[in-house]
Image (tube, rainbow, N blue to C red):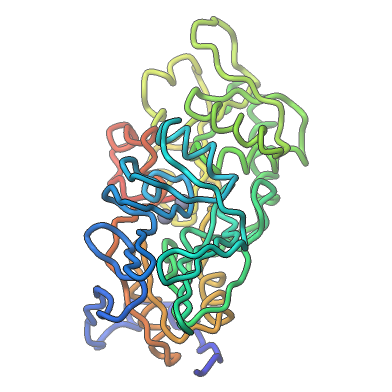
Length: 381
Ligand SMILES: [Zn+2]
Ligand SMILES: [Zn+2]
């Protein structure tokens, strides 16, 4: 394996020209028959362990990487997840689900396999799942990031033979600033709005992003923040798990009051809805990795875009792939043709898996987003 990185500046400068004249490789694949984990119509199935990871159809036994809606779906008979995911999963899937908690790094036997969960750094409780049978080790990253996030355990590098990695932001244009830097921008924007005597409405995905912003803002203020009803209960779960954040209060929709000078955090689904009417003259902002692409903010009608993602950026993807020791790389989420092509040039056995992971916009509370903003609904956080 050649672990030297090739020069990616050519991708950065002109992806179109780079791809010109190259065969258009069809890379969607179902895994080979001997694969320990296969992408099937039900999800990422491990026959030897008799479980499905993040199934999109009800399964006998579901191993859940994290509580975002496209990874945690209802209807499975049994669930296994990390302790920090349990309350979030009960909130999303119902208190009566049959769920077993397994600590990070604790190995359990399932069928003929040994399975363990490892921190993914994505949201509270998020995990990569390691599956071992005989000498064959597979890791599914779930969603992950390597940037510091005060609301969850940091990503842990796990050695493996085959890595199934998310590739939500798998283009070199995606590179992130630290959460602290983005929070400084948000605090500055809030201050400008206070001077202008208008409310600041910040749209963030309700699980993970909102809490990360509330935690990072503690470096800049101790003011209280108002939360939309979809954000407040999830934020309370984070508090119950010991995460420090700015003081918050849930909006009381019956209360007639002036929100000028206040910061309000709401899910993207609330944008453009009648809910917004109570914040006359508000400045609106959206926190998302998609704000990295020029034009997205204007197209979607936000006053400000803050580039903050809970997914790995291009360099974190490459770093993880090269450091984990795997020779086979399978990608999920989004358009990973560039990544697959790049990895093949480095000598990897790389393919794109067809899955139903859609990105974190699949949260139920964000479903109105399409109607509200006219966006394609393809956006992820
Ligand atoms: Zn996620
Ligand atoms: Zn995902």
